[in-house]
Length: 171
Image 1 (cartoon, helix red, strand yellow):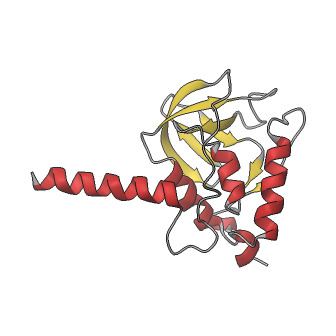
Image 2 (cartoon, rainbow, N blue to C red; image 1 turned 180 degrees about the horizontal axis):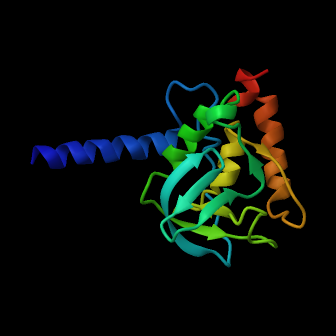
């Protein structure tokens, strides 16, 4: 019984973090209180295996994914300001085992063989866009992939102007 209570408490905290942002990290509060959108047509189901950093993750089907339309600060040997925070935010939005919907654009793979995808949660949150809204990534596009370009660029401007995340912390 005690184990069940502990598991429920941990899951509850994870859900709370994912819905509210990361407490104690300036600029990572949720992007807005607007109702979630609609998952676009053409998505397919996937399950998160592991988040590597703020814009790279692995799916349980073996795909290594580079999130489309964004670039987050680096971690590891080439660490950049806000890299760890960006990684923690993506891990809170997409914990291991999370079921998601994924969507490719024109070019499905990058030069390294990674799947280029947008990821949507069950409540239709565009995770790529959410990272930009919270100042954990910037909008970056490589033709011909340009889905959600307007939304991502607008979110970046708002995050920058609002001093969210890396825009406040990294100068």
